[in-house]
Amino acid sequence: MERMNKMADDTLRSDLITHSIYSAWQFIEYTEKNIATVQYCADTIKNR
Image (tube, rainbow, N blue to C red; front, top):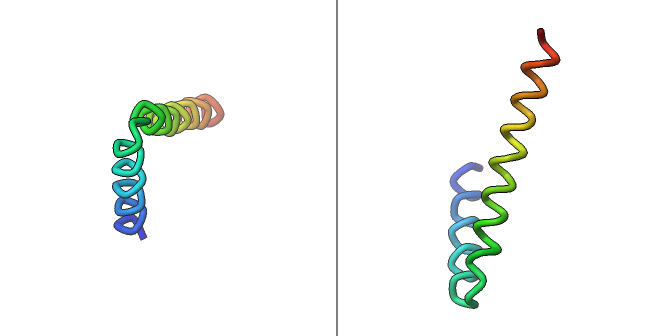
């Protein structure tokens, strides 16, 4: 499943680059990372 997600991500990134909107792809990646960080912090605080 993870491999399929990676392939879909690569395809989406390629399409965004082709259409000169790579910054939108970067925004999506950074948003996902930020959400994961916030979730980790919230879980850590909750479990104290």
